[in-house]
Amino acid sequence: MILDIVTYPDPRLKEVCEPVGEVTDEIRQFAADMLETMYEAPGVGLAAPQVGRNIRMLVMDPSSQKDERNPRVLINPVLTLSGEEVVSEQEGCLSVPMNYRADVKRMSKVHLKAQDLDGNVIEEDLEEFPAIVMQHEFDHLDGILFIDKISRLRRSLYDSKVKKWLKKKTAE
Image 1 (tube, helix red, strand yellow):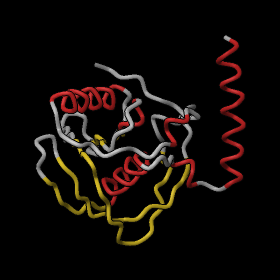
Image 2 (cartoon, rainbow, N blue to C red; image 1 turned 135 degrees about the horizontal axis):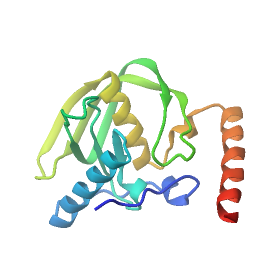
Image 3 (spheres, helix red, strand yellow; image 1 turned 180 degrees about the vertical axis):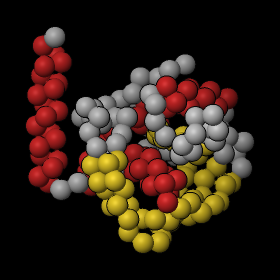
Image 4 (cartoon, rainbow, N blue to C red; image 1 turned 30 degrees about the vertical axis):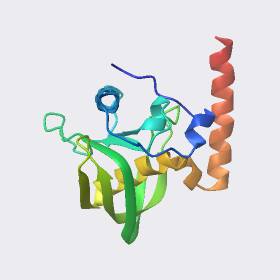
């Protein structure tokens, strides 16, 4: 089932998410719905708060080939950042309206520890694009959007555009 994507400035996107206590059939179905929503959008990652659930769960597939999908479901992820600081060029987000994009500073490597849908612990190192996607989605679990990481001036200009867009959308 395709889920509705929550968009900025919805206050739910600013909340810190709660850990998933147990991997249930309901969580597995939610993960399947999240993946379907992510692919349909289309995107390379989606965190639970982006579809209205305040839980520490995300899905991602940073593979660039549509015919070679590699979907990942990560529950209660914990990240350790390492490597060097890199610029994620023209980063975007399914929850940030008007297809807004900006350069964001990220780390080139992350060590991931999480659970899969069978409750097994996953531990792995990610580099480059998968590491950037992971950091972006992980930020959502702590109520952080990529636009929170841009300069005040750029953010102020973006917020003004969103206000005008929302006013116009409401008037229609």
